[in-house]
Length: 114
Image (cartoon, rainbow, N blue to C red; front, side, top):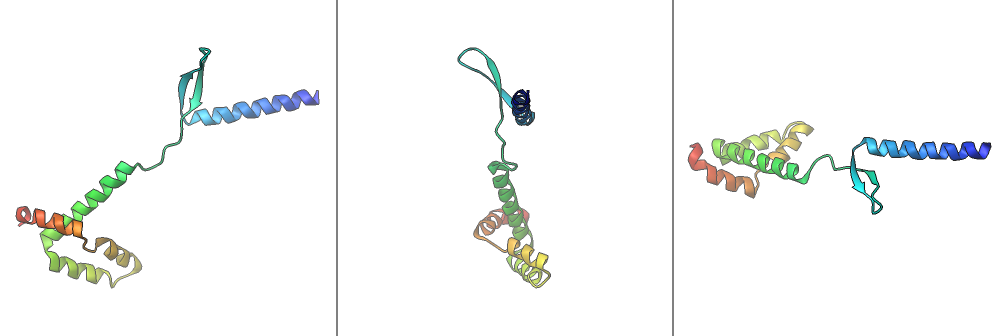
């Protein structure tokens, strides 16, 4: 009797594990013998590479527009002043420092913004 109980508990644990895996999503697949079975979907990363690239491109465009609208000297003065502040402001100054891509975007946009 005890052996039957152990076997039953093992089957219940296996079914619970499969149920938890399928709760996150599943796909159906037909086996060679014609039986349709459900397979759990693989977990996807939370943030896609495309979203990261779009965010970085948008941020560089923002910096370029800002540079073109206020001018390089004013922008550098503001970033320098920001670098003298708190830890968060210094981090912001590091992120907002000029870079070649932002400068190129600013040069391209300057005729339209002035």
